[in-house]
Image (cartoon, rainbow, N blue to C red; front, side, top):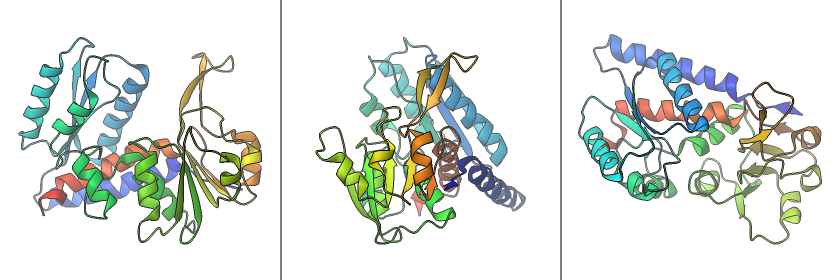
Length: 291
């Protein structure tokens, strides 16, 4: 069993991006600029945004954090998005999800100019991705594909099961895995899937992205399978000072011995998500969607 070290790969990619940014700036080009909108004080969101700001520093980007309290109106948020859309100094920006209940997330996602949508959530980017056109690919799916490539894990002709059908991970990663270059045969499973265990037992690659801690157990995995764990649930724990522990969707201790490759939680897919966002920002700075 080999552990897929997302942190090590992410550090390597950030170094590659930083070198390219240094070259761009040395040649008189503009330093890429990422802005982030953070609403409220959700613990998970605060942590993610702090990691994103730090990653911008490592990559040599300029970053701007725009904060609002939970009671910000939808109109106020949409006005700020419009300003960022029209601000030529900002190459890409994200609105950190989830948002408070009184704000329509889909309306916010669609308000972002798709040419600056480095999260890859806008319907235009999602549509372009599904037919293989240049676009900003959703960060977590892009990170998963990059990990498989960098570890030289064979995907062509392999049976890949994606557990979860979210718009942010499940659907886009299924689409990427079946595209030319990856060439996997993909089955998407979800809460209504029957015979889930049997389907998983036939899989060469399982991507678990359903948000249920330790859902995938050893009896669902065939020997030698590749396991990608996208789950990050905060579970109460007496083992840590904070009183909680991050758990993946895979029961790691019992599944790992059966695998050829497996991603840990934390330190697997998570660092790659932020890394993919950095790569999208670099592409935005280079005018990917204006060509």
